[in-house]
Length: 131
Image (tube, rainbow, N blue to C red; front, side, top):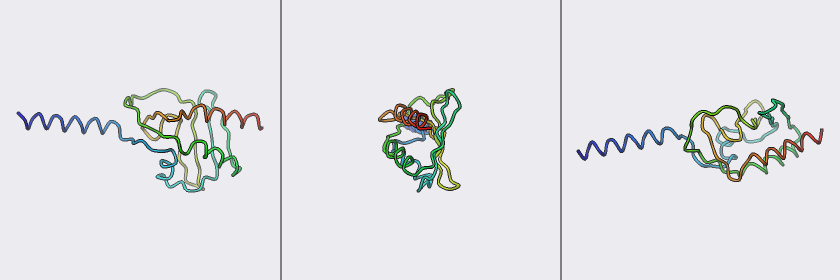
């Protein structure tokens, strides 16, 4: 009986951990893990309009990265598929790229601390007014 209970608990823990393969880390850690070392281009796409802005000036790239690189991404318990997204961001290092949305990296949904949406929204709107 004890072996069966232990086995059930062990299998349950395995399934819980398998459903949430993400871990809490900074955005910078995620893109460094993807071997993005020197970002030379950023594309920000607005999910509500489909419009996108491309950043190639190193000063703007550095400014944007300094605003978002230390944001903590924590996996959400609920990993059910969602429709739509607010902003999609692509960081490019030559031919290598790292794509994510403000609440999803790879197949894992995240909560951010601080909230990344207002930061990206403000920066994106500044880009619009600068054109």
